[in-house]
Length: 80
Image 1 (spheres, rainbow, N blue to C red):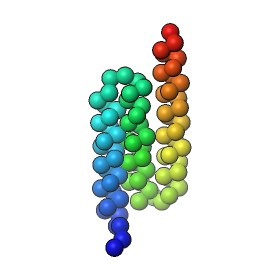
Image 2 (image 1 turned 90 degrees about the vertical axis):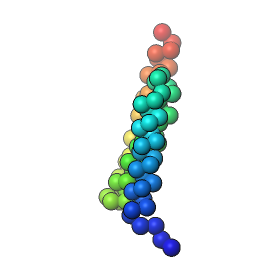
Image 3 (image 1 turned 60 degrees about the vertical axis):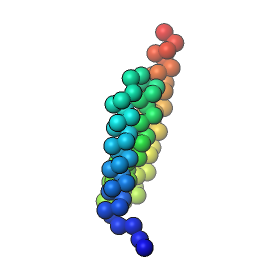
Image 4 (image 1 turned 90 degrees about the horizontal axis):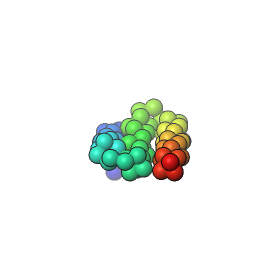
């Protein structure tokens, strides 16, 4: 049994929707940052099934950069 592209698109769509829900539902910046890697991971799975693994690696690096920047901004905001 092998996984087809429809399976990857279904799982990626679910992860993207769950990440979008977490980002939209949380009221604070640190709490909403928890959904960003999930959101971008779902997009990476979807586009990785279509475009290849190179995009998934770039999306993972971008998710790491966004979370690091958001964590820094949240720390600067709480220190005021």
